[in-house]
Length: 249
Image (tube, rainbow, N blue to C red; front, side):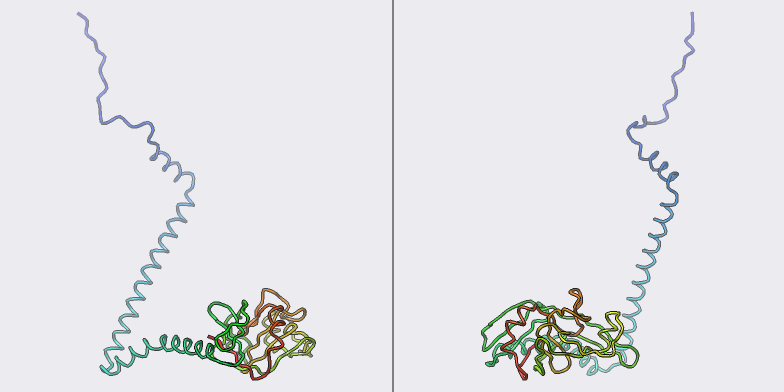
């Protein structure tokens, strides 16, 4: 009688899936790119730390606001809440009233919608001409004590001067400096504001792209002013005169 000494291997669990290579691939990736994983962990930790800092700052601001409000009387708290709520509404109401004033103006005037970037030649609710307008960015110009904040104009202005073709206009020193150009001894340049331009009270100018000088760059718009196409300004030039109203809303 012969005995079969062959033994069957002990089963220790389910057969591994030969198609599941995720674990081996992950190990291979870690071995091949240890630096990438280190950078990923560092970025993750920085993001988590930033989130924690922002949450802490928010809690700190809230605590400080609560502390300040606790030291106010009921009247002072109500007054502060009304002031914060009314500032934004006040600006909106003022702009709406200004737009209505422009619509009802029976005299020929210009109106500029700052938000939509449009300029209109109007009279008594009638729009005689409508064309695009680019407003210069808000920016601090000048240096030291001569620094001036140039912002988009708002409100009612009047035309002080109409600069026609061939006439000179002295560009401020800060314009040359803002363009990174040396300031010449003679800053009055013929056609510096294009063929036709309007100088408003307060220093705001409505101009077109010049052929020479610092404003000849199509990508640059004079801060705090308005640039429109040459053909549009030339078309309305016969209607422009000193004292003419210009509404910015």
